[in-house]
Image (tube, rainbow, N blue to C red):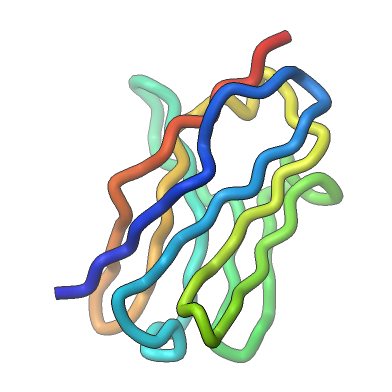
Length: 114
């Protein structure tokens, strides 16, 4: 059973920063890619950022230049550094891993106050 455990969400003022962490229960190289998605109530889940096994990254246009995805292979952990946060970044953020199937974390709330 693959587990993805997220942490690092919380309340921050606009312009502030947060770092999300996603710890996997096995080597992150077991997955073709890992990423972060976010979802607002009543809305579809959307991709924020992803990183492939080979290290290629991809970002949603709305977060380019503000968010950075990275990984620590030794810790089996993927991070999402979020800077210059805006109220519209308020969402539940989910860690995702794609292998034979897709795996999801439980989600962590990020709230940005204006």
